[in-house]
Length: 247
Image 1 (spheres, one colour):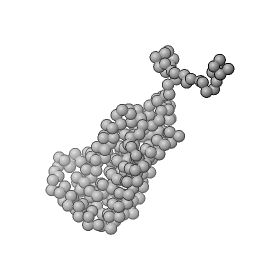
Image 2 (cartoon, helix red, strand yellow):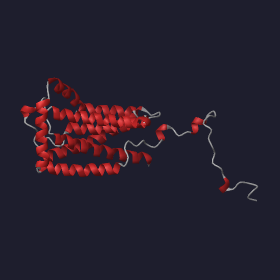
Image 3 (spheres, one colour):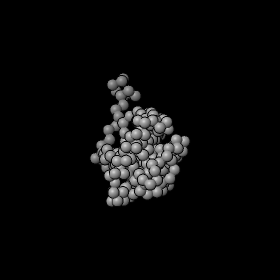
Image 4 (spheres, rainbow, N blue to C red):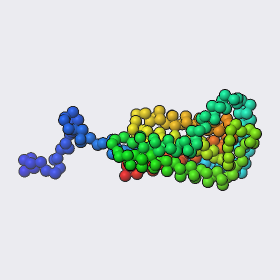
C-alpha cells in the first residue's frame, strides 16, 4: 500500500546539518557560486550610455554651440583657477588612465580576485580575459576618436604632453573601463563590499577625467564622452561575463 512504503512522490529532500562533521563537503564551493552583480539593470545602462554617446558624438562632430560654448567657457575657467601644485597633482593622477598602467593592474586584479582554489594558469587566464575585454573597448574608443577627429585645446594651454584627436578622452575611457571591471572582479571575492568598490571605481574615473581637463589637454566634453563610453562598455562586459558564468 502507499502508506507502507514511500513512493517517488513521498521522498523528502535531505537536510544538511552544517554543524555535523564533514558537512562542509556538501556546500557548493565559492568558485562555483553565481557571480555577484555590480549594478542593477545592466541592459538599461548599456542602452542609455549608447544613446548618450551617439548624441554627444554628433554634437561634437557637428560643432553644436550647446557643447562647444560650454567647453570653451569651462576650459577658460580652469586656466584661470589652476596653479603649479594642483597641476602637479593632476599630472600624478592622470597616470591611472595610461594603458601601460591600467591594463597590467587589471590583469593582476583579475588573477588574484576570483575566490576559491584555482590553478595559477586559471587565475592568469581570468586576468588576461578582463584585460582583453578592456582592450577591445579601448580600441573601439580610439576608432571613434580618429573618426571624429576633434582638435584639442590650444597647445599653449597644456600642462604636460598629449597627442592625437580629443574626443573621447582616451585616458578617461581607460580609467573608467579598467576601474569598473576591477571593481566587479573584486566584488566576487568580497560581495558585501560591492557598493564601496563601485564608489571607488567611480572616484578613479572621476579623478582621471578631472586631471585631463585640469591639465588643459582635453575639453570637458571629451571627458564626458570617455565616461559615457567607458561605463557602457564596462557594464556590457560585466553583463556578458556574468551571463556566461551563470550558464
